[in-house]
Image (cartoon, chains in turn orange, brown):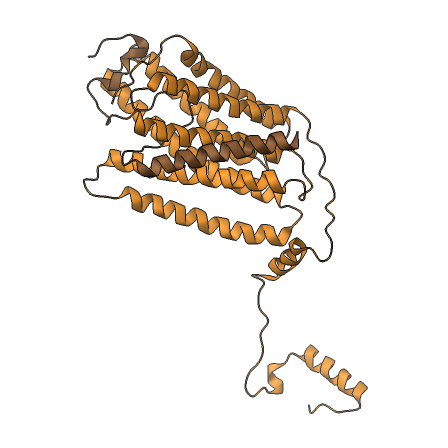
Amino acid sequence: MRWEGFHVLGLAALLRWVEPLLCLVGIVAIVRAKQSGPYRFLASLLGVHLASICLLLPLLAYHKEMHLTVAQAYTCYFYVYWGSDAVEAILAFGIILSIYRLAMEPLKGLQRLGMLIFRWAAFISATLAVSIAVGPHLTSTSFIIRCVGQMQQTQSVLTLCMLVFVCFAIHPMGLSYRSRVFGVCLGLGVMATDQLVATAWVAHAPGLYSLFSTLNGVAVCAAFSIWAVYFILPEPARRLIMVPTTSPFFHWNEISKALGDAPGFVAVGPVTLDNFAPAELEIMRRASDKMGRTVPV
Amino acid sequence: MKNVVRAFVLSLVATGAFASSQINHSTKAVSVKASAYPIPMCPPGDPNGCGICQLSACTVD
């Protein structure tokens, strides 16, 4: 398989320069908005993406000047591309997790329950990705590509599920479509859709690389632009959430708050006074005095 | 505005779901990084560099 129709000039080449610039604008916008704490996974993803481009671009265009042979340059390109892809897929899981945490901030019980389910889903997804990648005639190359591919597909599906959830539950959570939680989720959703479409495209029509690279670049630049705009513009304050006492949200939140608490313990069998602390005996004595009984000492 | 956003999100999800079904039907599906950079599909150490010279107009060593 070759990079047929790979444009030296034109929109595809332009996007390869615009992409790192938008990435940098996104990082600066996050830092300037003092949001690098709650959105650290997003800032890290943009950082990794930018770093990978800083390595990929010279390998593609200037490997002669770097005194690398074509085979050496391609080998470096291969590992940088797929290595950064794997790291970005893991960081995208982190972004989904942080979006969920921020969106469900007022409903602590449901937040805790959802995080528990999400962690298990992420663990199972990662295990499945590794197990599916292991197969007959396995080489290190095919293992890397298949493992990263599976992880990325799972992450894309999870992202789209999260986008639907945030989109339809944003008003009950006190947020709006101008909130950064929605903006981050929307940008990630655009990237996830692009990745799924691109994967299907590459599988069915491997010859259409020029148009595909251009569309891929447009989608990723759109996602970076969405993030940059949301972090440059001020975020509206979160509204107070009012739910009726009969609301299932309220009940499930209360139930979830109690889940996972440390249990109480009950003494079973004969209990002697030696098992009690002096302070406990004193309390029992006073209680008995009030009731007109005596405690054997 | 709300309906426009929702329609856009649903169209993204529907596109993703359709693409996902196409991936599952294909035996040679390889996931792709969201980037304008070309996808290295050849094994590392490819003597032709998988066509890397098409950008820099160099010659294969």
